[in-house]
Length: 114
Length: 115
Image (cartoon, rainbow over all chains, first blue to last red; front, side):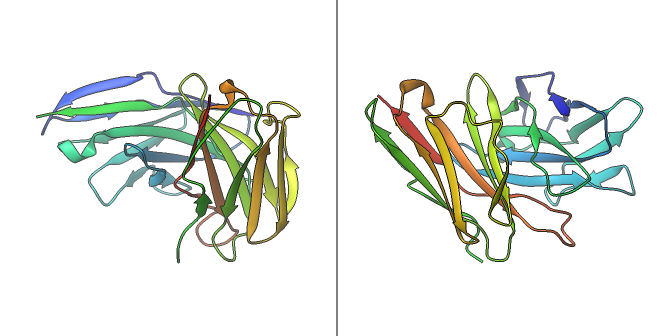
């Protein structure tokens, strides 16, 4: 079984400032890791994922996350946020064996202030 | 590709009524997942299917909830009778084996309000 902890439920940040959204996971098996973004009144969109290989993964809109196996973390970062980044961000994991469901964290609401 | 399609997008009903939520997965996907999102519990799995067969329904909260997948292109989630605590956003997601490493694609969700 897996579990995901997102330590911050809300993160306010000024526009063009850097941000880090924290995610820690627990699992007895090897996992794939994901960050999903949910804009207001919309569904979930995959932001980025770690499957294997380089521990640093990047999205097309400037976000990056680094898989740290020893610390069981997958923190999400962006060096300079925009107003349009205001959304809820979910960290998720799933076992690598088979086509299994995602286990989500409770989410972090990122609010970018002008 | 139209993506995962869910209907209705919004449903308002009265306590005790039957509610049916519908999902059409992406063509060619062989796994389908139903998730529920609430403020208190966040996103949680209700049930998932592989090749139209229910694999794990341990997340279905009560016998009032049932889900079916009669074919590869359609699934329903039914609540009978509905209760106010069932109010939530219900998401359907689908995935397939292959190069995308089973990435799950989510529908827009159905926002259910039970009065």
